[in-house]
Image 1 (cartoon, rainbow, N blue to C red):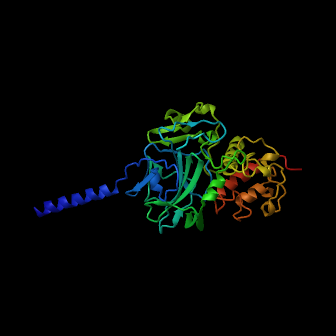
Image 2: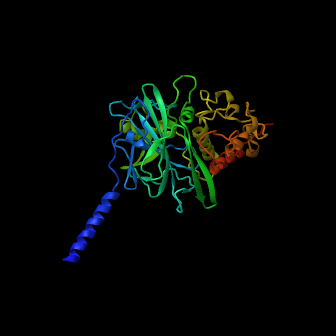
Image 3: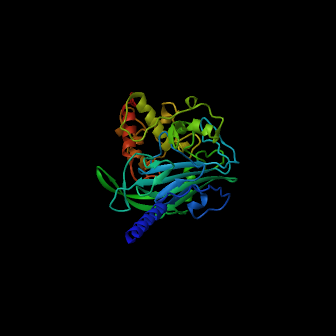
Length: 384
């Protein structure tokens, strides 16, 4: 009798433990038309519980063909459009035209390395720990989630920083620094990860300084989105999937849309593949400023993927007001000589008055620098 009772109690304890560890139900997303909610959970885009992060109902994950580098952080990107707001309008060049009410999030995290909460792995895996609309929080360290919301007055950017318990992220308008230790096969290195403040977020997202619109999305453009994604029910092209799900209107079939190369830190390639990967990398990392309408328009250096090879791409181009950023080099790009090119010098630097991009990193992207160096070294012609 006693043995039977003990067995029943043990079974009950196990059932209770399993119930406590169950992932939370997907939250209901919310459009907050004004104000700045203090907690990320107020938006209903993500929820945490039972050691798991899950997406909200009808919240769609996505990724980019080639991703922006942020100190080797992995990123979970999501978009949610209210059912009564209508789909986003397709644009072959610029960001999709999302309706008022749209909420876009980007959650930055690292795989844990063990030996302490601050120890994380250095990798280029992208979204390696995301599967089946959730992330196992025992395997990762959440850092921040950035919210980009489209209100009647325009797009607003709001940074949220996760607490040490990984139970909630809180609005941190002034930004923050998070001390981490990056662990790799090469050893360990300290990283002061920077969470940008509200103004820095808005500045990066003001990709067109000529129309007065202000901040807008950067990643959700046809050429960045035209790639496959592993959804819960199978792999599909993102443009086709968004069209089928009613998130996007006016888009052609994916094969007729612009497409950037997919590159995620692999060793530099050769020939056309090298050129495509390098152009995609410069496009996503640099062209939101370095375009004919971006904040760096007066530099004359334009790094969008379709910019013709020539002086505006930096080939044999003298810099404008670069100061110490030149590193005593004469041209932005010297074909066949990456070691003489300003572009690679600035990408490799971590000095605040030299490095490019100016925000979003405290480390150099070793694989990215190697890619651009290989691309320049493969060019022929020199600068005379």
